Picture 1: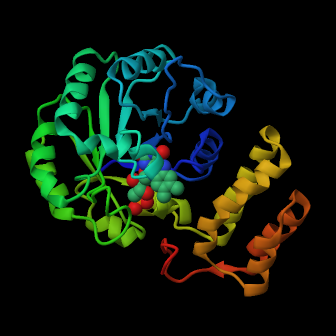
Picture 2: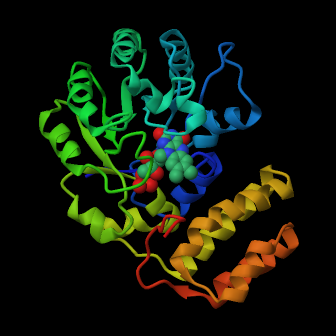
Length: 315
Ligand SMILES: Cc1cc2nc3c(=O)[nH]c(=O)nc-3n(C[C@H](O)[C@H](O)[C@H](O)COP(=O)(O)O)c2cc1C
């Protein structure tokens, strides 16, 4: 079984991946949040920092491209090959309205003929092995048989399947039966992704390779635990938090660091029983001084939650 860290845009950037890799074990590959290349192939400094091989040294990171133009995908794949990457992942799963409205991400599943033309070209010419990250349909699960047959035609390096349609977003139960069908029929490795938040849930799927996202964001020791290593403790969570915070402070302006750490803590707090006034103090902290003090107290005064798992915001 391989275990991969899912790309989480706005969270698992190069700094997060490095600190996670240095603090916890169990991850075979870290998939980078999508890069959406512009036609001029110019990149923001954040994008450059995320992709630079020096920023990913020692971390098994796989770059992901979000793009509907085959020529641009191939140019980008060449840049990534020249930078030393050994594999590239194509995002066919992003359900965000701003992405699908441009016909990218899961939006590409809407038109299987156009998708086939795109895949014909990239699989014929890509300088790197191409893995796919997809959903099981755009509007309806009825699209699954057609999409499955389409993907089976290509020399896919690895297929990561989140078995929900784009319309289902992250709601309802994943269609696990589709994943099982793909795993039986595909001549290439198929990786399961979706709603594995507890070690017990991962172990039930241990005959497959897994990609974990929000479960790892809440419990960064999840993969290590699944592999029989140490489970999460308040100390290891605090250590991870402190290393991450210090590392961001080295590179980013303070206000940006505090904003990012609130995003990180949205997940980490779900692993803790934390007194309500402390939760409020953390939420309210808007500068580094108040944030550091509130975070210090959170880790000093909380206990580990009994049943650690990700809870969607509406629950
Ligand atoms: C905040 C957030 C950002 C995400 N960013 C990306 C991304 O950049 N690329 C991608 O392929 N999937 C992205 N995803 C989807 C995740 O990689 C993953 O497929 C999804 O969270 C389901 O897995 P999970 O149930 O283990 O979290 C994102 C999901 C979330 C919640």
